[in-house]
Length: 325
Image (cartoon, rainbow, N blue to C red):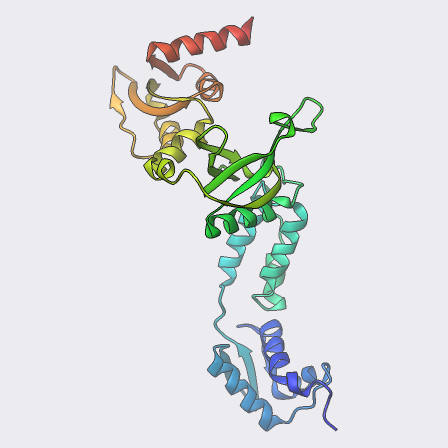
């Protein structure tokens, strides 16, 4: 009498071959039949030969090797190489916005792409200095809602918060909902940002996705298409997300030559470094002038100096006055 799972034989055979074989681990025909029996499937050699051929034709590569008097079978090419999966695991483990639980869940899913033997090679811990894993997994559902709204050409509403001195979420606008037309998601410094048209402020703004709560897609068509299309997307990303909010100005910086790497890392390779007196260069950058930008300059301890315009130099003096009063 055949086993009760006979109709699932091909599926279980694929599972056995993908999980238990790889380039260094193979199964003989008797071993394959024994593994099928564990799933209450009775199999004859001839039918298994045909099934292995069917899997190979379907795209699950089955390699047959003769060693002495024995024939071994194993899976060949897979969707991911082990090196590629290690790279993905490293990226997931080092990402700030992915929670610990979601990190483990994603890695378990990646392990299903390879054999149980290769999966052990993914069981490693990546050490990243200063890594803070986001404890709130709602970000995944927020991102999904935003993508849905964009594809459906709909606006969304949400509450937006800041952290208070007690480490608690404190909603802005007294807890009122923001109504925003989402136009793009931007990923910068391991964080997601929504670029959208604020219906109340009537302008393009960006929002930290992990600080959005109670997100809901509205039955309202998006606004702000012209405003979004008028933007220089690359410049918007560089100016705002590297230096936060503020009025955009062209700022001239005088830098020691040793700061060339820092400047290019911060503003990209398209900036022009102009040689100045011995050991220095100048560079003009468009930035959103804010306390974050000014503090970044201060942190470089005189190796980068603001030369102009005067309004930005004044802002720097005011900030220094506040810091040291």
